[in-house]
Length: 294
Image (cartoon, rainbow, N blue to C red; front, side, top):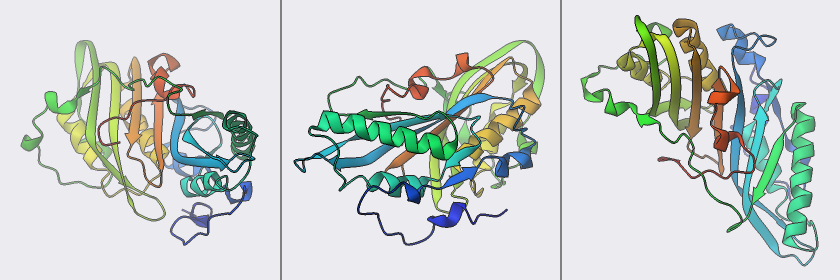
């Protein structure tokens, strides 16, 4: 695969722009990974969003007063492109010494508008952006009601021997009634496609299917990503597609909450319908409480 675009900034020493600079933004075509897993761009087997939380955002007012906050960025999975994470970090930091507004509140509106327009233009899709200030929001928990898979499975009883994605691990049996699951697993670990730096995450699965998923096989499958090099969005889509193909679900949602790296955490979610997505996660105006290991 050609990683020249992805590697524009990743894995390299980069100078941070001293003033606002949208030219540092880099987009990556989603189809580069989707074609390997028979995910058709014009017939996606899922709906969903990519949710980014950025914790290192700031700018100056006209009085040179710093404004700081947390930025939430949400855009749909049917966009042709994703934004490369280091380029986004460089871009957001280019606001640090730039001046916006007479007051912080006025400046926030201007910066929100600027970021929304720049990312929407880059990704050729509608991007929603919200800047949160301390005390100006209510925190909501994401994936409330999901139970750790360890409640159902004795992890010590499993032997792990595959550390590259292995769909043949997944096992199921046909049942008479719908199996309904809302489970989480803290064992997700993959690596950056370009730098091979580790990315740690928690996987969430909502499933309603007459094909009963063997949970021990699911744990082994999640662990098989340990040596895989993919972007966060790609990992979620790969897991979704494998489960979708094997289980023919009535309803399904696969989401991941990744640990922040470089001041940004990325939380993709894919589902059979928007009804089973976590509304707190995909709402740009809701700042979510951090999960364990975030």
